[in-house]
Amino acid sequence: MADLVLEGSFGLFGTYRIFQKITLNTGIFPPGWEGVGMVAGHMADSVILSLIFVWPDIYSKIPGKGAVKGLLFGLVWNFLVLIVAWIFAKAGSEFMKAYISLGSGHQLSLLFLHLIWGATLGILYNPPKDAQ
Image 1 (spheres, rainbow, N blue to C red):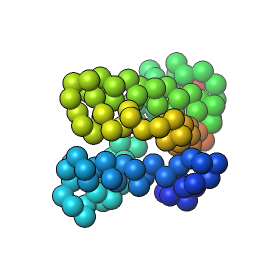
Image 2: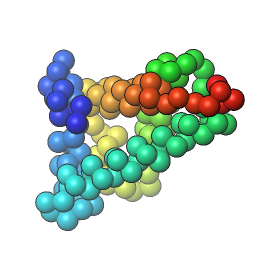
Image 3: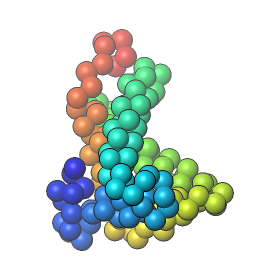
Image 4: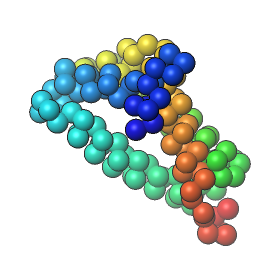
């Protein structure tokens, strides 16, 4: 949602529409279901990856508190996504080839969005006292 609301701001964002075209062109979802598939996929990813963030062995190793901890998680996550995308693009994934071919403005937008997600996690998560 943030991507659509901020589309065009500072020459950034708008990645949702780009990914919608990529999913249509690569045939990941049936025509007309690109948006539903992307939203459902990102919602599932957000929940699963949030569980990684709150896992005590992970959470306790991330420096900082609250939003800072979340920002660092989002930053690391963004770079892991790029590494995995590069590996799968080299292995032949058309979707990942398109993903890593996005221009610097779109890559920066994705970084900002992952930082927003991470900061939100950091702000909303209230760990038990022994996990801090």
